[in-house]
Amino acid sequence: MRVITVANQKGGVGKTTTAINLGTALAAVGRRVLIMDCDAQGNASTGLGIEPAARRKSSYDVLIGEATMGEAILSTKVPNLDILPGDENLAGVETLIHDDPRKNFKLREAFEAFRRAGAKYDVVLIDCPPSLSTVTINAMVAANAVLVPLQCEFLAMEGLSQILRTIELVRSGLNPDLEIQGVVLTMYDKRNNLSDQVATEVRTYLGSKVYQTVIPRNVRLSEAPSFGLPAILYDHKCSGSEAYIMLAQELMQRERERLAA
Image 1 (cartoon, rainbow, N blue to C red):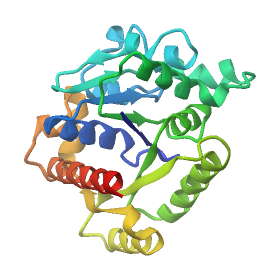
Image 2 (cartoon, one colour):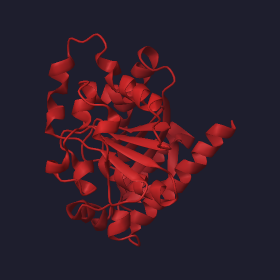
Image 3 (cartoon, rainbow, N blue to C red):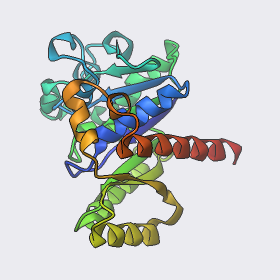
C-alpha cells in the first residue's frame, strides 16, 4: 500500500481536484484506491458524492483515536475507489491533541493498524488542508511520498519553497523515508505567458521531479464537484479529464521505475 500525501499550504491550487481525479484515473485501470479527506471543508467527500449526513465517522475520528480507518471508510460511485471522509470537526484537531507527545504520529499509527488488519488498497491519496497544520504534518509522517500541486501563477516559487522546507523538516525529524513523489503544474493557461514562465522556472529548479503532464484551466473540472462526480466521469473528454488520465499514467510509470531501481 503506497501512501501519497497531496499537499500545498496554499489554497486553491488544485489539491482536491487532483486527489479526486488522479484517484479516479488510477481506479479506472484497476488500482484499488482510497482517498483520505483530511480537510475540514470536506470537499473531496462532497466531490465524490458523499453527503454530510452519510459521514458517520471521519478522518477526525481516526486522528483522535475514536475510530479505525476501516470503520470510517465509505464506498463511492467509482468502482475500485473508496473514501475516508472529512468533516468540519477536523478544524478542532490541533487544539485537541496539542499537548499529546505523539501528536504528529496519530495518522501513522492508524495506518499501521490498518495494514495489520489487512488493508486491501494499492494507493492511498491523502487530501490535506491548505495550511501547514498538525493535520498536514500527520499526513506527511504517515506517507511514503508527497505530491505537490502547484498553480501556474505569480509567487508560485515562493509557495513551492515553503512546502519543500516543510517536507525537509518532516524528513529530518519525523519521517526520514519521506520522498517528493513529484510536482504537478495546475491551472495552466497556454494563452498566458506567466504560465509558461512559471513552468520553465519550476522545471529549472526541480528538474525531473516536475511532471511532464500539466493540468489546464478547465471549466468542467470546476463544475464536476457540484454534481458529486469526478470530472473524469462528468466529462471524460474534456481537457482536464484527459490531463488527469495522462498524469495517472505518468505516476504509474514513476512507480514502476522506483520499484525497478
